[in-house]
Length: 231
Ligand code: HPA
Image (cartoon, rainbow, N blue to C red; front, side, top):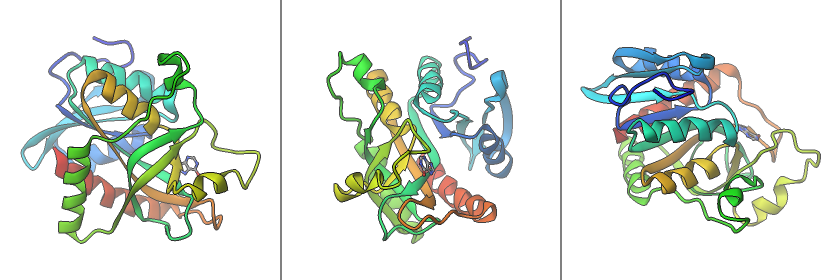
């Protein structure tokens, strides 16, 4: 039994979808899984294990930000998870990205010190698992889903003081911002498991647009279907 996930080895599937929002975990379990069992309610961070097309899969809320996600990833790894797929939202840093577009993160730069703490202030380069990325990309192509594969930025700050802060990162090709992947990829490397982040664009730092709640729901379902091809 771990501290933040009230489960034992065997309660968690090898593949775990990781939405930030625990209510999204519930929605994924309700909309996609059969025979789903809620194995965790500690701190309201819901986790479920069920079946999708006959294959076992878990879905676990991670919370917002790298400290929260790190707790769940460490505990999932100790409970036997082998493949973690974050399904989340991001803010676009590029003008060609539209609300609802899907972004797959090849790497995650960060303003966080969280990985440097583990590396005596040297920089680890957090990268996706190549096989998982390639396979997800190929499934997207088969489904006729357009996806943007590239580098993202994982930030500790949602509300930046400087509205132009994103421009430097955008200049260097960063597609979008979220708040978890740099830690997810580093911890996956540490635990020798696979990880991938799939995101939908929920807002744009370039135009200031924000997706409606209804559009967010639709886009989230589309992205979840793509993630579920990897179990
Ligand atoms: N900033 C940081 N994280 C995010 C954003 C954003 O604009 N949108 C979705 N996750």
